[in-house]
Image 1: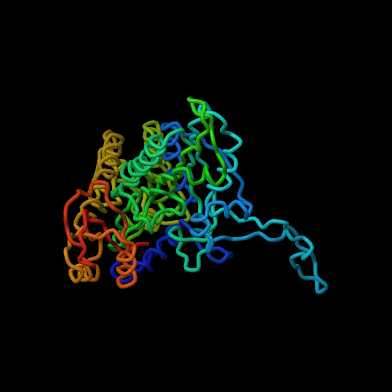
Image 2: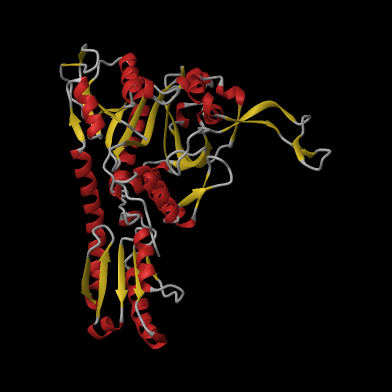
Length: 490
């Protein structure tokens, strides 16, 4: 199997696009801006989904489902929310087609909807209209609901997984009796996302808050996790929003408090999407293909027989199937690839391209010596292991790979955080090195916008660990209280 991948140093963007397609993760569809997620790509997403779903339920959340269509009037109720999404909305205006005189199909002009429906770009409005019916008293709170769904945000420039007009995600929507509870929830979900990114994706992230201009439309505070890709660009990997009482007031969601008064509830929303698939690819993969962390790999170990003739295959298959069973009993996902339609070398290439963490090869000589050849995808190293020790060695290596992939990504990220004090220095680092740039900012949207217009770099976050200190804004020269992280981003 020939890979013929463009290298990362040649053209990082082209490398990414080719890898997504060649590794069988996804492809462009017949609908402009939308993608087909192929079975192998979807298997990775399902593993992500399963772990996140478990984490949500462990923190007290339940899954529900809300309509795909949202009446247009709902959007007009929360002004900043509609401003934030107006340019991205797909709108349904009619409900019927009919044949025209030439035998073609046209939209029936008599089937116009009384009120247009928006295909959900996010579900705050429909959910808060629903919560009004669910909430009467403090006894009904908190409501901790998540939904797994698809959303549509009309995109002009698309890229598989990173930016498509339709994408898959989860969106949590919670309602609370107090401001403090809602803030604690928004912060908790940011931490859940950070734990998932680090423990499962082996991707280090920086926790922080967004600036006012980068906040979610309708939020009072947006918490985020920001990751660094191998090309030095940042990627927002997850967001959690404290919505205050904005949506409760817009949709008149009140509850009878313990003291008998009527109060508006406090809200949060939070979400991650299939964009995490793009982050996973760009954090770890190399010029040979995908490199998947064992905790999210659909196939953790592949066994490839090397043989001549049926007799050798039968003998190797016996050992391979026994090994497959032993590993599966230890919770390891294993594939035994005994297809006779492809040669071992072709299979080695295929599994390297698909990022399978460990590959076991068994040939006639291995049968005699009671050994197998074990190859690691992350380091491309091989070792000969006794058949008696292979199960323990595989378990040990999977754990080691998970840790070492995180360590490697973190070292790269840490090397690409640069502190600067002047705007000239900022522009030089941005051009020559990239990565996160830590600099003082005067806190004004005006300065933020000017830097963005001149350099395409945005404030990715105000890190939670940013210490209060007196400084001077690198751009305006005005006083500043803390350093923020700038970067070019996806």
